[in-house]
Amino acid sequence: MKVNQAEFVISAVGPSQYPADALPEIALAGRSNVGKSSLINRMIQRKNLARTSSKPGKTQQLNYYRINQDLFFVDLPGYGYAQVSKTEREKWGKFIEQYLTEREPLKLVLQVIDVRHPPSKDDQAMYAWLKHNGVPLCIVVTKADKIPRGKWQQHLKIVRETLGADKDDPMILFSSELGIGKDELWSLIEDRIGY
Ligand code: GDP
View 1: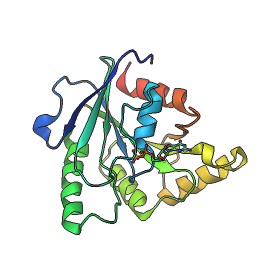
View 2: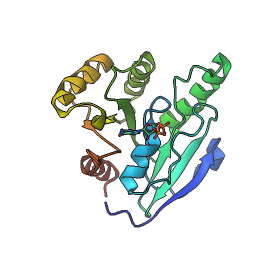
View 3: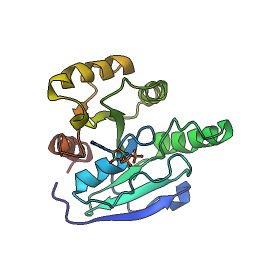
View 4: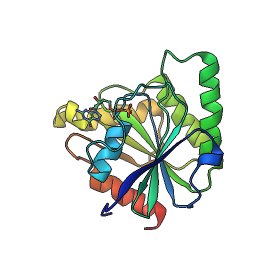
């Protein structure tokens, strides 16, 4: 996809604020700091549209970015942030769960994982929950530039095994730094939104 226009639309704190355009939505899930904003910026070739390293986990909002008149990227709040209280976490859970299970325009969830470490308990729980609820997903393993090329396959295997991922779940190696995986991810997204 050629991105001609990309703009931040809204930080939605509830369903009444979700855009009504009915464009397909691609959501990003992952722990705080995993590299979700950087991934969005790389996909649209802009340095700073999506906010990188904003205070993680503090706010429960969905950040909507409109790409051309074709789709939205929806950045979900990072999970697994230790300083959030249990009550906060439960509230987070309800809000996000509702979005992920009930949002009609949602076409695909990108579950973003750091290539350097085996998926955390939170990553595993998120994956299992998405599968259980039949939410279409793609595992995006990012920060590929942080490990030597010769170790990529081994790390991807660990990610797949630790998540307990199905063979047919798409998995894409990515680097926001170098642009690795960008074209492959766009192809998958275009396919899922019927572009
Ligand atoms: P978010 O909290 O998930 O939105 O994470 P950010 O996009 O803010 O990224 C967190 C940190 O990781 C920042 O310092 C980014 O520069 C860095 N980062 C993200 N993606 C990559 C990547 O692919 N390669 C490298 N080397 N650093 C990355």
